[in-house]
Amino acid sequence: MTAMISLRNIWVEYGDKIVLERVNLDIAERSFVSIVGPSGAGKSTLLRLLLGQEAPSRGQILLDGVPLKPECGPDRGVVFQRYSVFPHLDARHNVLFGLECAAAPLTGRLFGAARRAALEEADAMLAAVGLGDNGHVFPAQMSGGMQQRLAIAQALVKRPRILLLDEPFGALDPGIRGDMHRLITRLWREQALTIAMVTHDIEEAFALATRVLTLDKRRHDPHAPHRFGATAVYDLVLDRRVKAEIEAIRSITIDENDNN
Amino acid sequence: MRLVNIRPTRRTTALLGAAPLILLVLAYLVASASRHAFNPADKILPTPGAMIAAMRALVIEPDVMTGERLFWSDTFASLERLGLGLAISTLWALIAGLILGLIPLMRATFGALVTTVAVIPPIALLPILFIVFGLGESAKVALIVIGILPLMIRDIAAYVESLPPEQMIKAQTLGASSWQLALRVALPQVMPRLIHAVRLSLGPAWVFLISAEAIASDVGLGYRIFLVRRYLSMEIILPYVAWIALLAIAMDWVLRQISQRGFAWAHGAR
Ligand SMILES: Nc1ncnc2c1ncn2[C@@H]1O[C@H](COP(=O)(O)OP(=O)(O)O)[C@@H](O)[C@H]1O
Ligand SMILES: [Mg+2]
Picture (tube, each protein chain N blue to C red):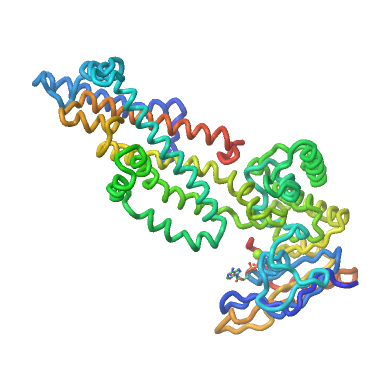
């Protein structure tokens, strides 16, 4: 299968600090890639590159063979661990937002029949993430799990091809996490998404993904630790045979702390 | 139980809050009465009767020269200046705050300017304003604007800047342009903060209004207070001060109501 996203010799440097070095990666369409690694390894940085929020210092990112513009676009949705819904809008209007932006460049609002049609679409999306009865609830009144469901609905209503998740379930209770795993797996299949998810939960990484990527430093300089960046040290495509290797990867240091 | 854990009920809070005010009034009445016992012509602490008599002349009876009820023309003149100053400042704080907070290029260009203007004591600029605008209404309104606008802009800009970057990124992935970010993400979230900034600016705005009126005016609450000071007319000054306090409290209350009613999401409504 040809790659949908290609990273060619990517470097990310902030000043003289090298965060990512020599990252080469091909991501196939409709795959579900989990990204794990110790805190500060550059997982969020990698996601920001895919999102187009930042450009790499060196190297090239191709989307369908075309260089990616360093700006966010509606073909790539995102859900962060927190703060990815709008506190001043209720659930329906949070989802409606994306539809309104595209259709009404000047006012950012829809009226009349166009608005009714968009609201119907938003309601359907809310129902798909299990928030069908919560259209008029504001984020401040929602649990963490509901807020993340809303953030997912908000992103998916734009029908993105790629969904980027940065520790989306990191702040949730373990019980609720299971529900969210089923939800995201279903949406991934139904909407033919390509997903890249950063997580510090190794079980989650293996339970959901078709491929698990571990970012870490290959080389260490004890006197100048910032001079070496992280790269993909393990890259496991999951099939039955590889599931057996899960135990092996457990020995890798994985950060257990929330970070973003 | 620890002192820090004792929480008054609503009723107790109201009673406790009223107590110092009532005590203050009582203390005044006692002091005024004792002074008048020694010297019936005392001017420093006038009796309530003297205040009522003096105010009746201003509130109800028309002035012999102008035919106007001075208390009301003072009130309307001051409120008009204050209202204009606040309205202009609020509008510009909103516009400039959004622009500076959202657009790094604008922040780089004008950020230092706003900070510089904010540290100049506005009263020091008053002579310049009188020279530029003359002694009319615009100089007084301008003093209020110059006095409160820079800080309001800085507050709003800092607030816009502090909105979670995740939100701004998310909005962009949903297709929002810079204009839509300002209109649909930043503007509505800034509104409660803007009202808050106006509430905090009410105090300084009154200070600048009274100062401007004291220096050059022929009507206004501040003008009247400084005029009658020459005759030691405490029986007019004290009710005027109380009236100014009442107006300020009422304005603050109205603004708080607007914020709570209009922006319930920002007040943690459950
Ligand atoms: N804008 C930035 N400027 C400087 N350093 C940064 C910036 N963004 C991230 N970093 C650094 O890059 C490293 C990787 O960050 P991040 O990608 O957030 O790690 P992770 O998500 O894997 O925990 C961290 O050491 C962080 O301090
Ligand atoms: Mg991170």
